[in-house]
Length: 339
Ligand code: NAD
Ligand code: WQD
Image (cartoon, protein in one colour):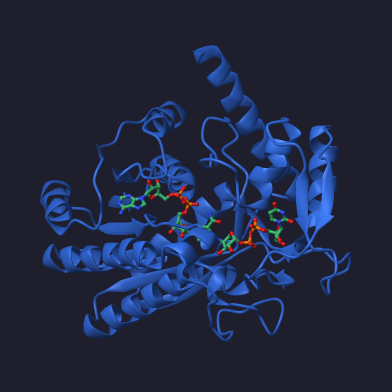
């Protein structure tokens, strides 16, 4: 079984490629390196001991996709390639709509031509907007508050319509909650350019003293300690969810929606305390005002994925803390030895 993975050198894609190779799938990666590095290709090969083809191409370019499909003849596509920064999407909406929508449409077009009918899509808990009921079920009301989130919702609609038009097509819409952590080897992980927007990469950079202090965005939310609550999930658990989704997609056509989360929410303060305890390091912080667009709490009801895919998250918070830190320590060691 051959799987074409777009964005396969990115954070979640690279971990999924490792799991696919470990499970015996053939893998083809297409990534334009707009938010990743070619080093990740070598690191995946070191971790798995396996080789696989990589194409440095933009998945919005139909002609290139067509050539890759003609040569590789994949049985399925897992589509990670997208821009993902919420704030940037507000500043550059057209860039986000273009990349995140055109990529999916071109893929669907080329898949039809090559009779490839299995599509696994990276959606996000962001499609639930500010949830009315917690934990969040897949049937919850959908809404978005920024262009990035809108691209996810629009992609979901596109894939639903493709399934209506083609009864053989299978689209698995996976709604990720907050992925953190890294592969236990420390060779691959999340390595954002510049100052991180997300909590975990920020905490790690404060712990390594690359950044001075963590700003906690608000302590007056309606949550147990007043700080924002999220469902953090280990990226390796998330990667494994894609394998389960693929298996299901090969069995049944149609569109299906699954939350990939743990079902447990942790506050920002709990995250800081846990990181300090597990890694025996201080993370100085200060409380500042709320960040525009943030919500109080968001965590999944993951029972549908368990019942229908046989998937549930196995890693705990301590694993996520340890692995996130280990990756950046190792990365910094590598940078120093290359200087
Ligand atoms: P990432 O930026 O690390 O990975 C995306 C990869 O896609 C990068 O390697 C980038 O170079 C590549 N890419 C982008 N546009 C491309 C294009 N047009 N052609 C070829 N390659 C392209 O992001 P990630 O965190 O691994 O996220 C993967 C997917 O999961 C994205 O669709 C994202 O929206 C979604 N998602 C991420 C999170 C999160 O918090 N990380 C949460 C929910 C959903
Ligand atoms: C988590 C909590 C912050 C940074 C975002 C996207 C979402 C999805 C995942 C792709 C919140 C607080 C954060 C900091 C802080 N991405 N925080 N200080 O906002 O839940 O989700 O990433 O689909 O679409 O919106 O994640 O990690 O940014 O924030 O206090 O420096 O940490 O307020 O409560 P978020 P996050």
